[in-house]
Image 1 (cartoon, one colour):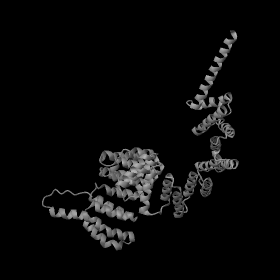
Image 2: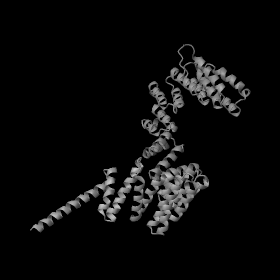
Image 3: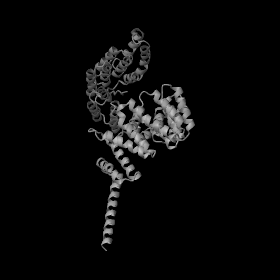
Image 4: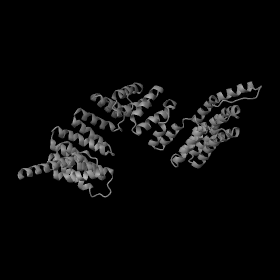
Length: 484
C-alpha cells in the first residue's frame, strides 16, 4: 500500500484519519466480497455496505480499484470498469486502475483493448510492474518478442524489480524452456517468491539441469517449510539423479504431512525404495498407487521394472504386458523394455528359442502399431541379438538394416546412426568372429565415410596396414633367402 505524504501544516488530525482509512479499506471490503461471492447479482444485499465504503474511500484510488477487483472476481465486469474509471478520475496516474480495465478486456478476449489499457498503465505509472506484466501476458503467444520487450522496459523503469524472474515466467508460459532457464538462472534464489522459485525448479528439470533443480528444491524446502511443492520437486529430481537417500527422506516427510493419498507421490516413493534395493516395499507402494488411482497405469510399468531388477522376469513380463494393454499410447522405449526382459531370459539360457522369438515379436508388434518404426525395429532386433552373442543371426539383421537404409536419399541423423552401427557391428562380426578380414573391409570403408573418427574402423585399418607391412617384410625376407 502506498504511503500518503502530507506537506500542509495544521492537518495532522486529517492525516491520522486518512491513514486509518487506507488501513481499513481491506476490512470494509471483506463483507462486500462475502456477499458478492454468495450472490453476485444481488445488488440490494451490498447496497448499504457499498454506500459506507464509497463514502469512506471516494477519494482513494487504491480502495476504489480494490472494489473493482472484487467485482472482477465474480465476473461483474461492468461494475469493475465503473470503479476503475472512478479510481482514474481520482488519480489519473494510478496504474492499477488501468491494469484492472486491461484485465477485464483480457477476460472478454479483447486483446487490443487490453493492450491499450496496459500501455496506459505503463505510461502513467512507469514504476508499477503490473502494466508491463499484463501487456506481456496478452502478447506472449502472438508476439513473444514484443512481450519480452515490454518486460525489459520494466527493467529500465524499475531497476529494483526482479525482471529476470518475470521474463523466465513469461517464457515458461510460452513453453520456451531453454529461454526461461536462461532468465531464471540470472536471478537470486532468495529474491524469488514461492511460485517463481518452484517454477524455476521445474524449468531447470525440464532442460535436464537436474542437479540445479534439486538444489533449488532443497532451498525451497528450507525457505518455505510449509510448502509441499518443494518436497515433491526434491523427490522427483533426487530419483532422476539416483540420489535415493535424499528421495526417501523427502518422500517420508511428504507422506507424514499428507498421508499416502497421491498416486504420483507413491510412484516416486516406490522408485526411491527400489533404488535402495528395497524391492518388496517398492512394489507395495506401487500397488498402493494403483489403489489410490485406478486410472493411473504407470505403476504397472514400475512394478515390471522392479521385478526385472529382482531377476523375476516372468512377473516383469506379466506387469509390462498389462501396462501395454492398458496404454493406448505405448512408446517405443516401452517395447524395448519388454523385449529386453525376454532377452534377459535368453541370456540365462531359459527356453532360449521361445524367449528369443517372443522378444523379436515385441518389435514386430511395435511396427504393426507404428509402421514408421520399421528401421528402428530391425536396429533393436540386431542389437539385442548381438548383445546375446548370437552373431550369425545378428549379422543377417544388420545386413537387413543396411539394405533398408542405404537406398534412402533422405536419411536423417537417426538413419545414419543406425547405419553406422550396422556397419560397425556387422564388420566386427565378420572380422573378429568369422575371421574374414577382406569381407569386413566394405563395412569399415562405409563406416569411416559416415564416422571418420570411429575407433573400431581405425583399429581395423591400422591392423590391415600392419598385416600388409608384415606380409611385405616376410616376402622380402623370403626373396632374399632364395637369392642366397
